[in-house]
Image (cartoon, rainbow over all chains, first blue to last red; front, top):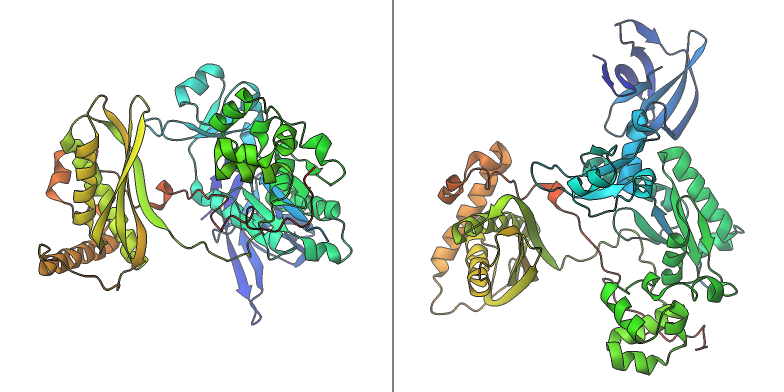
Length: 83
Length: 431
């Protein structure tokens, strides 16, 4: 279930852990319940977001040809920046 | 070769973390403060905008609102601040393993070995500052120098988001011209005393005869003299050198003023239970029991008492604290906050000499009861089992004294040993 906190949208994410311990998001569930597969991850870095209001590990994901910034917070939750 | 020491200070730390998490408050004055209902009603930190309006750390909430009517208050979230403090330390760790935290938002870093790898001190500081801004969304002020005292001075010199390098060439201009009160360990009263004696700037302290300062201030006079000349050689501690625990204590501002001995006894028992539980958790017992009181006129006193048998039993701690209180307080004013502390710690399996008047079997029973109560509480919550006296006032006893968020651990600069007076001071001559 998704949840809006200020300018953040916490969402459900399906992710895998590789044998080496690397975490990769595979798909995400949008606020309206639609499921989107992540086609490709083009960048992973630690960064802050003023727009979303927080900081974490940012996965720049390509979904249907569009870049989406998906953040993983240390509280084990994933969030998107609200428009 | 001189050491290269950075002192990194995260600007308005609590307020900056809150600003990051509340983009809707951009451009507004904000203060992080306690809950006015529970009377932890002071400003912990304010952002720069609020400071510009005159809001200061330590102000009562109502005072702050009077000074700045548009002020936005947010309650503190210690877990969040600790998380950001850890993340900052992760960044520091990429440059050195010599990281010594000074509170939650400041740290010294010895980057001498990093600088040997062709990076200029300024470049290291810039990289750290950039990464903290990008990765954590916060700003830092960094001071660079060859000793910890001047590095700290540098980080305070220009704020926010600035880097100040104090070198052997510029320290006389930058540090010595600053008021004496800007030197670490010159508090308000020392500053006043220095002022009346004609020492107005740090330079005045540096140029004064150290023996004269010693005669006036005692040993700390020599320390200040060495600090002012940049002769402090205290090393930056290696990361993970947890400082040994010297005492365990708890204090609390009560939800209402305490008016009589029964109120005080209730709170002392509550605090003693938490202190005893924490002593046992860390496998300690203590031989000195201390208590502190602050009345609603903000008069504070602390008293302590040595006991013959080390204890971690809540009932014993409470009885001794209560006795200290009864012997020393005259009830001129109602009481606003109370603390209980046990120090001179020994391992809890420490052998001791029993005396004729102590019932060892009763102590054993009390200890077992304490342990049983603690195990019930860990499973079913603090209120699962309470002493009868707690039911006299459930508002007062509703405080969970052991809750982690009551505890902030301040550190002393001398905690890891004073290496000012016993160092050889090879590098700088007295000017």
